Length: 403
Image (cartoon, rainbow, N blue to C red; front, side, top):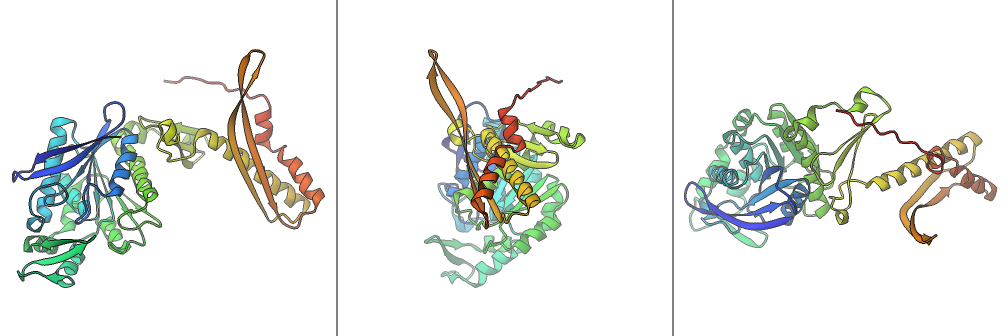
């Protein structure tokens, strides 16, 4: 992705800093605004990974620093939830003037509360996604007002996060105590996606579920299994971003979200859909949904198996199923089957030209008290599985272009 630092001012003439991330090629199809967690900043690695995934699928992304955080001006101890909301609106105004109105708002933790509160004031916002966001900031208020070091001013508190000291003014503490999230959700009137790690030790699963219960339809909830609050692992951040991309497509690209898949009407058939993303593909195989993609080396996002990997998976699954059926029919002690496959293009020279041949290496592991004769017979059976026979036979593909 292409990244650049930008700056603009909010309604109080305080300078705000942000990164603007754009796709490597072309004009963004949609703009997204990403807001950070409490005392985090736009430079958190997880946000860069999230932005990379979004830009790979045609988004432009602004990663914003709230007032007093990161490279933005102002004093953090003078901020409130309201100033965060004002910063979101200022960022949206800048994007609208210089690019396009952000259609997707993404907020992490306390940043989620900011985008949920700002969305109703942004007519161009069409969907909101939050990660690790509490239903009410009351718990954070209690934590900050009772368990941390006092400053010289009894109305202020000081905390140390990531080795950095932050002073909290009474305005922020009061806004955390008084904020009414239920009222904000009633005003949202936007599709909402809530992503929450069940093992998050900062925002509880129960809090996220209460947020989901209080929200109005349309709404979705996805558990981020094995993730922490800050999405510290790259694969966790990318996974969360991929889920957001897939979910948002239904609302930002209604042509792909409302057209029913062919497989829904014709059981046994497969429907494959690809929009403007590079190259995340949605597959509905007779009601079973999965994704395909290309590796990053080929311009994709590596968010699903490649087409050739799916081909190998088909052969591997057919091999294992055929062996299981045969062994069960014979009553042989076959406990487990593992099939490992790899596809490659092998180029050979012949008759004055280079020929590229497809080669699939298939390694079969059989576990169980099988004798040598049984193992040899199962090896022979593997070459007769239906997909294997199709690959070695004559395949006719009839292609029809429809309106």
